[in-house]
Image 1 (cartoon, rainbow, N blue to C red):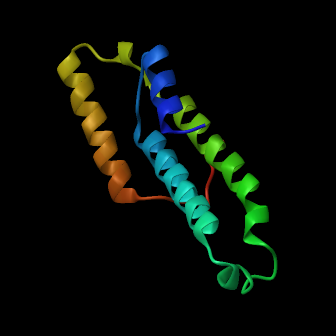
Image 2: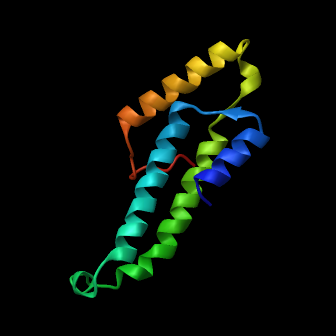
Length: 110
């Protein structure tokens, strides 16, 4: 699962983000960056680990998917807002707060 899948589901389900959802997405992005870093790692760098870091990729992918699914679960229906302007304000505010808080990999919200 990736961000495009997330966007598609959000549109289909007519959902809008929350601060908690944005935090989960930050966690998913951090995991995706970790996956990319492991895949780019040289053999010399891999040899510094007590195990092969490539063995951890499947776990990170599953955890990333859980964060994305949790972000969807923590989203709210657009019907909660009376106007489109109110919805846009909420969306912008949640994204800003989520970015400022950053990732919190220690916690899964499900």
